[in-house]
Length: 103
Length: 155
Image (tube, rainbow over all chains, first blue to last red; front, side, top):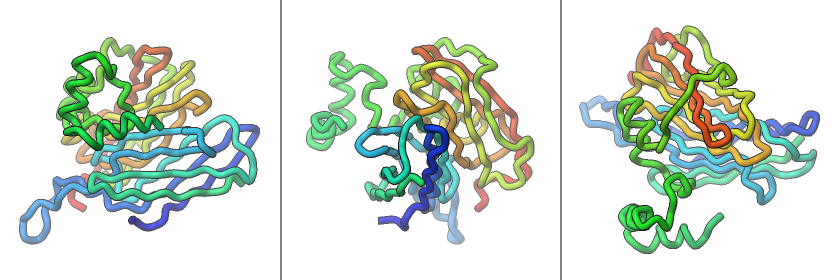
């Protein structure tokens, strides 16, 4: 399990904007450590954001997404007090899900 | 979530089985959304990446915008966004031409989600950044050159 994500969701004029800051190393597999050995790749491959039970965004990431990835997107609908959840899975099979209340 | 498909993947020999199913026409390419497109993310060049994603016949469009800085001081964290005013956008992808693997991220947008995503990417060097957008089943592209003064691979 990784560290918690920071998620903000705000509804304005019927459109909900979600901003998520995910805590993850996102190692590319191209860097070498002090001993010259390649640091193995470790990165988020899949991400799904849901509003209630409805998927509002699904994403696939490559290694070139920066460390501690930031993601912002907007979807129509959503109301104050409803929940948005963001889940990710990395290439080691680790997963994490966090939720935020739309404000 | 299609549980049956996930079970198929978990049991059987994963990718090999999937490709057999794809070959048999049971699963159409592009349908296996939740399964990471390894071929596309491993592809080195833009052309190979687009091929692996099953993209053909892209057209340049003014209705797709890549947002980002003109000059990024730190290639490890480059804010990049893609917005589009095209109708029925179902897919948005960010590709960086001169990175070791061009495909950076792809997003699948269900109906109701706006074609407006922002994220942060790593860039090894100054490069053209492409936004690929699928609208009404057609592919459109836009590009922006972002100059990098410090590469993203040095940590």
